Image (cartoon, rainbow, N blue to C red):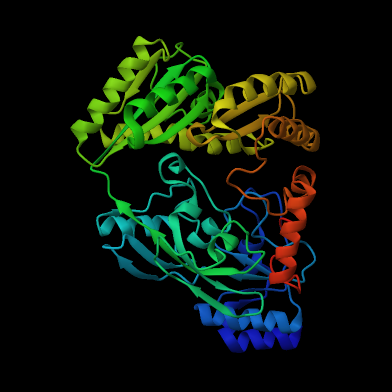
Length: 470
């Protein structure tokens, strides 16, 4: 491989071909700290032309490629395996915001742009880019698109797929497809854009994108509502949608265990309800108005009042300032952090028909309790779009490593239940290497054959992110 690496150094300069274990280490560890891969080198191009040239070199020498953005994925999709044959191709230096077209409500960006910086650039032009994730300070838009990331605003704005109008992609042969068209209607054949979004780098490398922008809301109001059951949370969702329509931009379900975990691990965070007044479930909801703060407040107060009168909710706290709103959102955002501090657990990123979520929880929780007595269910997520983070922690006093030995059995129980309710085993995290065996088990033979046909047609050498998805 010396000739190949020399070719890479010639293309990028030696400073951007990382070959020592120390230099490569940050690119080889997965976000959750459970896997460390090996690589031939880490390549850091600064332009789409350099990406294309590197891919041509990889194709010539049959070197596998692992594309990587911010490396914040949770399914081992952006790290190499242990063979040491692949190169990691980091898009971190492709970080230009190429163009903002306010009249067309679009922004054209490099794939390596940090999500938070895209949000800030949109806001500076009086616009909103609504994708919002816990990792937005470090994840990149290329990774968001490659995994079709979700987040907290899917209820109103959709997944990343719905926020993208056009792509620029380097193919496995090293050609550049320029599909950076800011069109909302384009019926000229197959939709290649949707083929690459969610493909996790297995069909090509996204290097640029045209993103949709929206008007910046005049006001956002946040509230935390308490209730006893997921059934009541579902009733609240319907009521809020009936009263508020598209103004409802966030609807997050959190169980009592979730907030107790946050209070235990982050005692400095304010607790909205008095001690001893625990409820079974909580919903964090957000309303956005393009009219005024008064309009948003009136909508929210009317809806909350109706929910209280109808005994759908037991109590509610409405934020009266930006600081209070941020503190309520911190409760939601600190759930994964609290879990990490408490120890390892078995995570499930699942989606279900919204109408069936209460029944799914009521059915699956007892099955887990029966199979794994005293296990703790940490259930939270985006109820408005049907996405639950259905995580299983060990019983009190049981070692986390010992409990992780049950991961395959826990996964099968949860995923079998998801399948029986017409759901999906991956809502927003993707498949990567972590869930590819599960995908093979739950996808139909027809779907798998179609996916393999697409992979073989676009990447006949099999060099694009091998071992991921299929």
